[in-house]
Image (cartoon, rainbow, N blue to C red; front, side):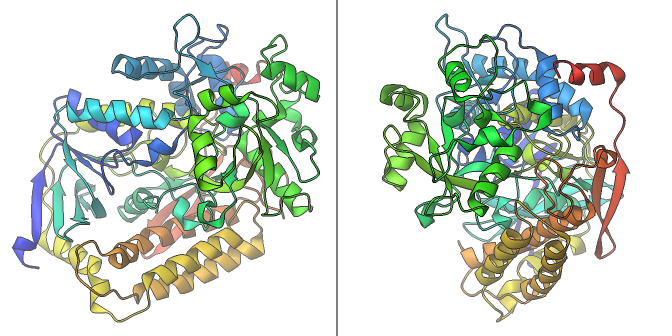
Length: 597
């Protein structure tokens, strides 16, 4: 490769991904006097965090003074079906309030209580109203504030830059190779510390709330660099995505609609969630419509929440069952109705984005009519295995925070925990990555040239269209690794993915390297195939149903597997799968989890 074809930069810390976790990591590393690069696949400010609507969970105790980190920890562990990394869940519950207050100090304009404190709304799986929010645009406000803080912290931002490979020299991180999407020119970042903050894997499925960037890049980069992935079988299908018209299928309908009183009904007009109450949650939720309505109107004497606020895995599976048994809507969903529970002014004030989203995209006025919704691929609980304290992976110098990091959410994430997770663990990743600074190992020129050759390979071939391979992959994952799985389907998925790998190696693209979407998709296929195979292999290995992972051939949870993790690692040219027992939960924290049962 000609030397003029590549730019080179030296940094103490390189953060890949400019969502909440990436920005918070970059801000913290910069505060530690590190020279920091922030690399984003899209434009700054367009990170997927802006799509997070409902709020950030933190036990501030502003609405319910009895809320505290212990209750938040208990809810997170119970919501995660006891599979969470207990230390991450503890750190998160303890540090989230400080991170929210810090965000406010930096200029975040949260909704307020009548006496002027940060207001908090109820959400599924949370014992108390706990989500600090800005209407239903919380993620957008978070990105606005973090971006402003980051830009004024002296961070170098490299926009529309896709990272294609991480370099590991003598067992530690040495740098990353990327290319600018506008020009196709390569860039080499030399550094001894990289923070992955690349988000999720939702674009491996047909129906998803995730935007185009979510192709599992960070998961795949870490895997190829030799890091371990955990919990990849646990994919969250959010209960409420739009189902009509087809052009908007999968777009998120915030859990805030249910938090503000919205109810789920089938095509017969039945409010069906009362039928799906798991044993472990009985006593925490209303079992009559009258009790539920009283709670929505502010009578919290019993604090028995509406059954629509059960955890996301429970609600998504209930909706799927209603549809499968013939009680779904004309377009294959169910109804979410807030118009019969709240007045038009209240809905427009509390859910402005949802009001405009349905009005503009579906021509539905949610202040008068029910929304048509169904499950959509939303979030992966699995990710890079990290140390709870530092967020460092099993590869020295490589860190992960946010959705790309595994462990915190166990088998099922509670709504609102992702936004506070970004802040808590983004900060920790940036802090410890900055402590690694020093001369990075030199990357051999031959390795850089080989990575560039591989990235450009599609231009040398007259193969099939990369979009056709991506579409086929999404169809396989939607059919065989969706919300309900079984052995035959997962084995079929793995066989089909093997064929798709062969097809991906032969895709060809034409035209120049400038803004070439075919080339970008050819590059994305590598990541999509890795995360799809990891999900299918882990799902096949876990012979039980737990949280976001449901096996129709193993419908029950097996307590022997509760604290067993499925670990994925690259060994030679194959994907190795093993089981590993998690450390036991300390007795004092186990007692906290059992409180209130």
